[in-house]
Structure formats: structure tokens, C-alpha cells
Length: 136
Ligand SMILES: [Fe+2]
Ligand SMILES: [Fe+2]
Image (cartoon, rainbow, N blue to C red; front, side):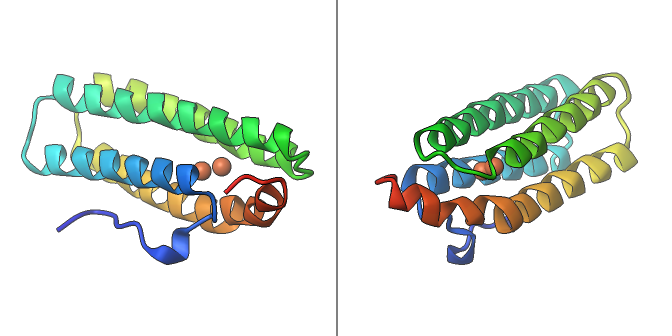
């Protein structure tokens, strides 16, 4: 069973951003399966690296839309993205140096909680503004 599932209630009303979120969830599931299957740290580290790269790419895409749509909440939203990058970078460094079940649990629950809370609490709020500027 997948660790996370994208459901319609997570939609932010912009197709390309929903696709990004599905892709992020897909990579988190891939990481989960790798951990469960006991894959080598180098392999898991590469999947985590891919996740961080894709998250950066996705945040940049959202922030570009914020500029196009003059989205007022952009500064606080960007701060949430930055805080994610700094927390995940810290976990990434620890992940490489210290293989541990507790760390895996901490990492996976952080990823799931952060993403769901951020999509529900912040991403969903930009939908109407972006839509009003022709971004669907
Ligand atoms: Fe997002
Ligand atoms: Fe966001």
C-alpha cells in the first residue's frame, strides 16, 4: 500500500501544480518502498536528492505564478518553501551520515505532514487568485 495518496480534495485548481504535487507524492512513495525493502543508503539518498530537486523546481514554478498573478500572500508562502528546504537539507545531511530507523520515521512523517499541511493550508489559497489571472 502506498504511503501517501493524492486525492481530489488536495486539488489547488491549477492542473500543472496538481501534477507536481502528484509527482512529489510519487517520489515520497518510492522512498517509502525503498526504505521498507531495505535498499542501500546510497540508493535511498539518491531518491531523496531527487525529491529535494523536484521540490525546488515545483516551488520555483509556484513562485513564478505568484509574480504573474500579483499574489499578495507570496512573501509568507515563499517563507514556508524556504523553511521546508532548510529542514529537508538538514535531514538529508543526517540521512547520509547516520542510517537509523528513527531517522527514517522522522523523515517520512515530516514529508507527509509537511506536504499535506502545506497543500491544504497554503497552496489551496492561491487557486482563486491564479485562476482569476488565467492560470488554470
Ligand atoms: Fe505546492
Ligand atoms: Fe507552495
